[in-house]
Image 1 (cartoon, helix red, strand yellow):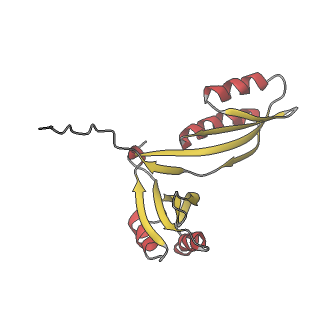
Image 2 (tube, helix red, strand yellow; image 1 turned 180 degrees about the horizontal axis):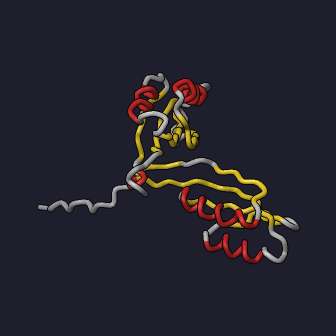
Length: 173
């Protein structure tokens, strides 16, 4: 990824209460901040939800966005996830035209990307792919020549990469 990153991923831990997502989205709308991607779900502790927000930093500084988010009472913690130090995934469902003469080409393409065929019609296929957002972009671009009938993407979810450095050995006396 280029060093001139225009999007930043924020992981926002919030109280799992009615209206919290609305307040977060409202803050972005009022301040004119552009949300590139938004995903939200409860965490393993049902008192909290995690909102993953990919922010377009050309519309506002990252510092300004985080300051405004911290002012919301239901926000517990905000972490910026650097793409080099995090694992990002997205899910895509796409229905493509696939007459009998081109179906094999599309199936081969889907397998190259480790996607799956979910539904088969007479002249269409519904495909799913889970992966890094750039991988989904690449498959989407390649499928356009066949004719995309419908497409839905979930938005990015991300977590920090795990520490893989070796644990120092302790001496036993």
